[in-house]
Image (cartoon, rainbow over all chains, first blue to last red; front, side, top):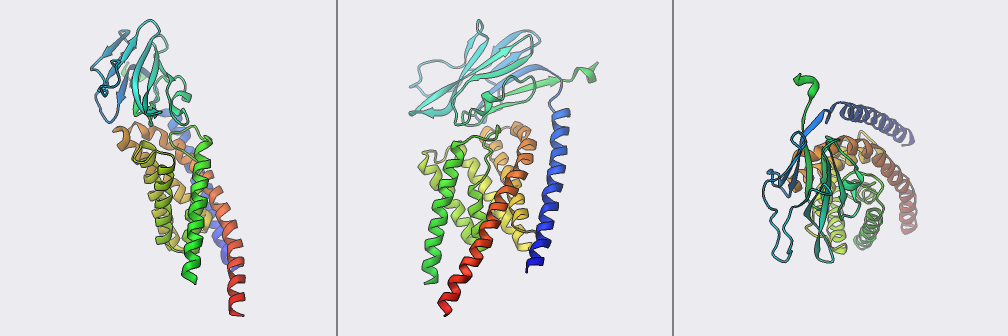
Length: 158
Length: 174
């Protein structure tokens, strides 16, 4: 019995080491090669929609409000709120505190072609802890708000 | 008598799993959407070995639903993610255990990998975009040590359980 256990333990060790090595390699390759290049636009989506509510155009330095976010009538503000002075876009997230949905504030930077989620409410604040992003998607799952980038890899198009 | 004992123990396991799940969700360790160490998975794994696949599935489902009710997030985003992850993990572990090739640590690690995959699949449906897949590599990588650790804990428990269980049966026979 004990020898059978040790055989299985050896297989376990092999499996864990092998999986860790393979997935570690995949992770490193992914970080090196995926989501590279400069972003031309950043699109902000809410819910399951694939039509961006706000498009941040890094090439023409514009913020386009494609359409208004559908919010229940008890919320008086109109979303998105685009604040060009502070360079922020505010949307209403899904996460509720005391029965009230909370806002998500996204800051953009034309010069750096980057986006950062600076304010949101969620259990672990994962999307705001992600920090400044220039091409990696920022996803606030509890708020169902996401920022995706359109990247044009300059090296290949030239 | 055995049925009564099993029922009591399963209820205790369920309580432990719920407590582990709640404690764990209060401590954010991994900076990835919905990723956790999966300590509640220890109970799923233990029941899978001590009792059966069926018991393991039912206790896991009860745990996910009860935790969601207790934290007031039933049918929320996190509920679907943990449900999907737990179902994928439990099914994968049940299947791998059937082959009887790997030990508890191996079974747990594979379960952990499938837990991440299940969560990502739920995430795709929640936001209607495949952008969540961007988080898959880091989640898969972190799931390996997490799965190995929970498997190790479950294995230690199972060894102690077996000796304890055998002593009790011996006493009854005498």
